[in-house]
Image 1 (tube, rainbow, N blue to C red):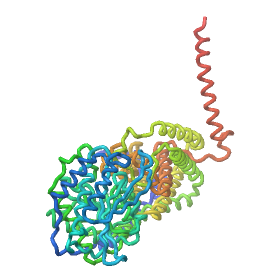
Image 2: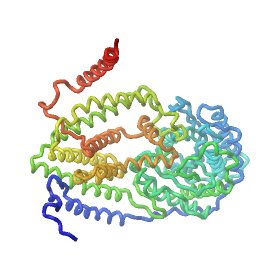
Image 3: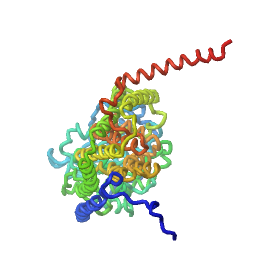
Image 4: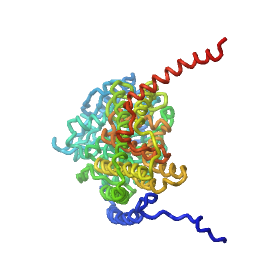
Length: 629
């Protein structure tokens, strides 16, 4: 091999120089500190003990439940709120409870349903009283409505039928000679309305029922007669978990009746649901209030296609198995052993759980390497007397633009351009591309572009940018990103799952700023892995595809998502904008007073528009003169 000539060797930039500003040794060394939270998380793994099974075998009648489900779906196929079948289904459920001697109580309330307007909804419930009026309360529930696009045989005539069948052993008939089961708790059999539209009835009952402060556990039955493997759902509307004992007991009862382990959300999805709390199932409002609750279902993570939900598709064997498991679970809960209160978070890994506080420690520990390297970068800039104020002002302008876009979105939501209604997740079936508000989106896009034209006037390069100024731009953006991550950690540490990829990818952008543009853009793209995970989660589990973006926007407009998290997301987008400008070499520090044009951004924009209009009017006259006689 020929030796390299002296002038041909390329030296690696010195550590700490402007070309290599990130302290990689400090970054790697700080990762060692994350080992302690990981060790703590490993030792936090626990195996919750299920409640014992009741001594009596289940008496759930699968054939009777199948007959009930078929009758409800055949007679009242469209049970959506406001539809003709809704009132018929209400009377149908009330009559079945009355046949067993229950006094049926109604809870009527008004709700604004996205895409359907205001509707009067009614929860029905029958009560098997406990030994005393102060007895703790167990709730078994199922929603009786459907989306109105099919007959709703499985979703959720099957759950409603099982609810009625589960109430039968507690019947108080005048002709009976004391054969009814006497529960140790007060048991409420609840038929909710609006369940297909985000659990409206369950949310209202959790807040406003006379038993709201006495409920100790909730079993929700939803789509339980499908051929799929039984499944347990446990996500909530807030970053809380249900009781691990309840989850493990439900799993044990399902294994006993079906002979198979129930399916569950994967660990990553459980983490995502803690970071971005979301659930369409009706147990979620109870868990959000600290009440242990689970949903038993045979549906997968994606909703059942409404047109396939016919009575012919009902699986009598599976309906009997899940119904019997629900009856045994109710018996386990009613034996007098109280569940630990809900609220403590965890990730369920089958027979074992990882405590939520340990996961939070790991996520917070993963912040440390980035924060250490970002602060070190800031200190290096200070030692080199590199001014950061222009870079921070540049970020401020970008943040102002994104806050302007957020304000436009909020204003258009108030004007009714976006879905309006209760702060509940809308039905997945209505989140289709046909429902996108095209006019509102066009107006929002046009006004946003105008806002950007105003903001960019101070952000355009007017002269060559020095390497030190470019480094200051990176340092300012990374400092803002560190502040964003700390605010996220304060609001909901689990949400760091969506922020950490950007921290640890974008930290290295200053290090590769002299690399090929594709390398820089590749590192920038890695930082979007967190938000992409969130969008893909909705796209896959709800079967929405591209409409997942529209669905997330609907969650924001309905106030289901915390406003503070939305503002933090806008601040994160401002960081992405500044780093994107740096990556494509379009960044400029905020100009000093003597570098700014005499007119402000708004006046400059008006001037450009007027001059462009004059130029268009003058063009035909010049052409006419050029080709005149």
